[in-house]
Length: 542
Image (cartoon, rainbow, N blue to C red; front, side, top):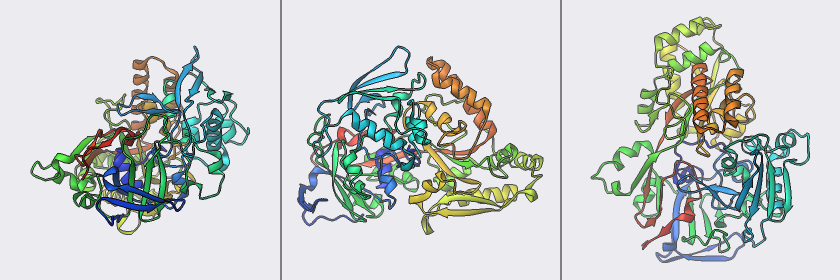
C-alpha cells in the first residue's frame, strides 16, 4: 500500500479519490478524442465505463515503485494477483514452484505476455523492475515492505550492493527468487504495485514517461488531458484474454460524484458518509443501485514515540482514553463505520472480538497525564498535529480530535495542514508533528500486513518510530509459523500489546457504499483493490 491510505477500500472509491471532471460528448452516440500520440480515438459512449475522480500533480503517485496508492491496475500487472474472491491467482506468471524448505520460488512467465507496444515480457524485465524499486535513488517508500523478504533487497536499498542477489534469471521465461525465510504470505506481497513490471525503455525515456506508460495490464492509456479526462483502451494482446469493456474513462475534477451519477455522466461512484442515509432509504430512486460492504481498513492517528511528549506511554494512553470514538464517528463520518479498538478490521483473519481496547475514560486519562514524566498538562511541550487538506478540504477529523483533547485534557493542539498530493512524501521524509493522520487498508488478506508492517521495529511503514522488543519477538515468530491457528494466536497477542502500548490511536473501520448502474454487469465490491474492470461487462448501456 502503497501503503494504501484511504477511507474506503473499493476500487471505485479509490478511483474517485485518486484519479475524474466535466466530461461532455458532442453526440450521444460517439466521441472522437485525440490520443497521446495525436491520433484520433473514436468510440461509442455505450462501450465506455465512466468514472469520476481527481488527479495528483506528484509524478511519484503514477510510478508503481513509488506510489502510495494501490497502483494503476488498468495499466500495470505483476507476477501474481488477487481475484474477486481475494484468492491468489497467476498473472504474468502462469505458474510457480516452491522449494521444500519454502525459501526458493521458481516462476514461469507466460510466453504470450507482452507490453502494450507488443514487446515480449521477460524475466529480465521483472528483475529490472524490482531492482529499480530497490535502488536507493528511486526513493521508494514501499520497496522494503513488499520486496524486502527477497535476499539482497535490503543490501541494494542501503547502497551496499548493485543488484538483488536473490534473483536469478534462468531463461527468458523463468525467474528464480530466494527469500530469507519460509514465509506463508510472500506471494501475496507480490500483488502490490511495488512488484509490478515496467518497461525499462519507457521508464528511461524521460521524466514524464509515466504520462505515456508502456504497461502490461488489461488497458492502455490513450489520452490524458490534465484537469479534464483520462481515457484507457483495452489491450488487444492482454495475455489473460480480451477485456469485455472497450474503454474506461475517468473524468477529472467534474464535480460531485452523486450529481454526476444522477445525471448519467458516470456509471459508478462511491458514496460519501453524509449521503449514505439517503441511498439506504428504500424510497430513494438510487437505493436499488447501492452495493455495500465492509472494508479491510483501519484509520488511526500516529504518535511519534521518538518525540516528546509521546515518548511516554502514559501520555499516549491518556490521549487515547480522552478520545470518544463513537462521538467522533457520528460527527465526522455521519455514523457510517465501526469504532476501531485495535488495528485489525472486521473480516481480516485475526480480528479479535475479545480484544481489550483502551476505553473512553476522561478522568483516567487526566490521571495518566499527571502520572507521566511530564506531570500533567502544564509540563507538555507545544504539540503539532500534521494533517492533510487545503482550505475547505482540510481534515475535519483533526479539528474534532483537537477539540476533544482540549475539552478532556486541557491540551491545546496546533493543526498543520499539508497539501494532499505530497502529504505522504513528507511523512516518509520525517517532516511531521508529534502526531499525524494515518490509516491502512489491507493489500492482501493476512494479519502480517497490519501489525507487523506497521509496528515492528525498523519497518518502512513504522512512521511513528515505535519499538518494542517483546512485540518484535512475537512478530518474528509469526512470520515463519506455518500453522494457521498458531499464527493467528500470535498476531492477536501482538495486537493486544500494541493496543496497550498505544503507539497509535485507532479510530474507525470504514464501510463502503457504491452506486453502480444496472447495465454494469459483474460488479463485486471487494475489500481489497483488484483489477476489477477486466471482469466486468456492459449490458445494453444507453
